[in-house]
Structure formats: C-alpha cells, structure tokens
Length: 119
Image 1 (cartoon, rainbow, N blue to C red):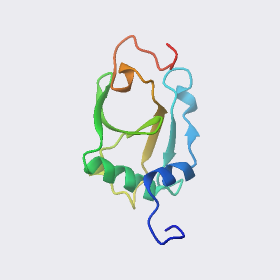
Image 2 (image 1 turned 180 degrees about the horizontal axis):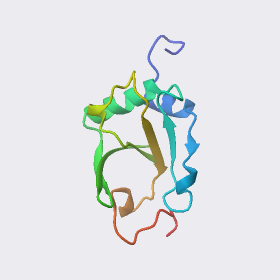
Image 3 (image 1 turned 45 degrees about the vertical axis):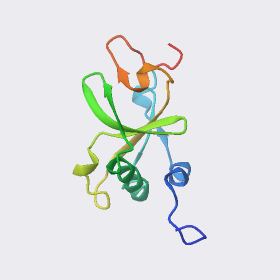
C-alpha cells in the first residue's frame, strides 16, 4: 500500500520493478524481464493479469506464437504463461517488456523481421 492507503497502480509497480536485460537476446530481440517470485513482483504480475482479464490485452503474433500483450507507455508487456494458468502468489513467472517499435512489428513479427528498433 502507498502512503494514502491505496494500492499502487500498475505504472507505479512497473517503475519500482528491478527490470533486467535479457542478455541472451540482446542482438536479436532485445527486451527486459522480472521474475515474479524471485524478484518479489507478485503484485506487479497480479496487476498485469488483472488488466489482461479486463480485456485490455492485445493479441499479437511473434512468428508462430500468439500472446496477449499489454501496451503501456513506451513498452509492451507479456508473459510466456497464460494468466489463466498462473498461480500468481505461489509461482515463479516471467513478465517481459520491450520498447515499442511504433510500426507493424508491435503487433505481428514475421519471417525476415528483426528485433532491432531502427531496422
């Protein structure tokens, strides 16, 4: 809870999260992530899943994968596990984020696309 006795909103949780670079994908599909249990980010993951459940997610394709993404600020956020299949408080799930491309690649990645923003 914040000083005012209210739950922090998702943007506050995002700002406080210890995002780390996904080094393995630095040259191909740069992004960052947090691990809910390990990083103590269950509240952030719960807020993400709540927004997805409310229908705020956008279905996008990454090659052959289809996922629900949440677009907030300059980033898009996603998980590899469907929110409906998570046990948020008891599990250890990865929440990813990547800077928006501001082009078609934000919604559909196709063969031949790159993960470099300037391509």
